[in-house]
Image (cartoon, rainbow, N blue to C red):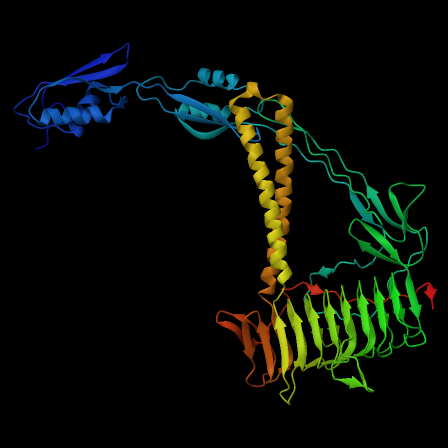
Length: 565
């Protein structure tokens, strides 16, 4: 039968009111040769000392001494401990948090002591009385917010309002939609000298915040948005310094932080009579480009007829309303034109292409047939509008997708297709990450200074503290911006891993698909087909929808220009 809590040897308890220490002594009783910690705890509870803070080591020695058959002289085994409170303030000074270690037989935390501690820390703003009362009532707290400052509201940045409708940007433009929108070729807007292009709106002021010490946190002022320097073909209106106007007639092109007006050079044809063309603007050629000629333009190039084996280079897009005959097939009329190629920073569009080398900074659109061509696009290759839509032979390379009605031929001609490669992405992601790491290291150093200021407020001036807090806030904003840009690049990198080849009707044996180190050779003719990365490498599947990608925008044609040759 278990002993009752009062059974056992005689325990003498002595509490020193001055030192608030509890001592016990035990006379050895042969009827109770052994005791343990449970017996001692029950005896202390019966004596009313259960809440004191126990000293484990003296208790172990006491029990061992008694169980060895010895009497135990008075031993200090417990003491009264008052509750303790601590307040920590976040680095930005916006939140004060309370921690209460509960009393062990001593005085509990009181609201009077808490208010005195708050006052000693200089905390005056945003006190949360309900949270403080609850913590005092509970007798304990763990990083409980008891004061909150008011965060500053940053000012709205100035912005540029583009005043012209339906103008393409120089950079690739994307829009969410399902299927390819092969709209009819249209005209690009032309402006005249004095026409308004863009209005600059001033920044808006922010709303200052305040930290828990009652010190103001200066809101970040809205950044002023300036027009980019060197906007060709434009000027600031003499009547309105916030208005950008055209300085000449031409094609408006929206660029980063502004717009430019590019004059359009118009010529009937490019041949030996006209000579090569190298023009700072957009070029419109009404008819054909003869073999061996070169056309270079900083803007767009539009060709109304056929491009024979020639060189076309554009800083914008290229539209060929006829077709392209390249020089990859060998000599033409005894001349070697294989070095000629077509390159553009935007998108390329033509009715057909044969033995041509074409590269585009955005996407390639061919309405009828791409035969024995070398095609390379940063985003998409689309072959097929109202006509056959066939890729036959050659090599096609695109980061996101290659899409045609028919790929390959009954003759099983070798047709190579490469998807999912964009080496510049990983480099750009690394640059963003390194820039973000540098800013985070600066923020860490400022955080150390703010921690020092919190612990030694008398050694840091309010002006220095305010500047540090403002710098920390600005760095946090820049870090978030870089992180967002890095995530956008990561998203595009993820899209390249979902790259695919789609054949709407047929895909023939002889087609070879590459994606990095992965290689897939089609061993038999297939109907509507998708080739993409699967768990075990590249695999072939029934035709899948590729609407997960933003649809590439087909380039428009250049309009009538004001200069002629």
